[in-house]
Image (cartoon, rainbow, N blue to C red):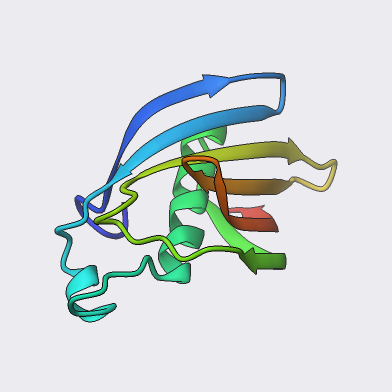
Length: 123
């Protein structure tokens, strides 16, 4: 975990061969929120992208490096004091050329906060 104590995995469920639903609890007291932004904490987009990478590494048991990000859509601001619990739906496939493709939708409650597709290279 790049950011120590940033989040905890509450549950992980494999729903099909390639699909996973993971619920995490974000530490709203983490240092990152003191600067982004004081008095009005908002989840940095780069932190969400890192969380998705770390969860994908855990599932695939591979060390990964981001190769491409596509269709990154931040749909709603995540305030960790109001909505610390996030649900991430990951669709993970490995290609013949050893790349890992991920389609993600992240929710708080029933609100879509983030949608993205990315490709990782195995290290």
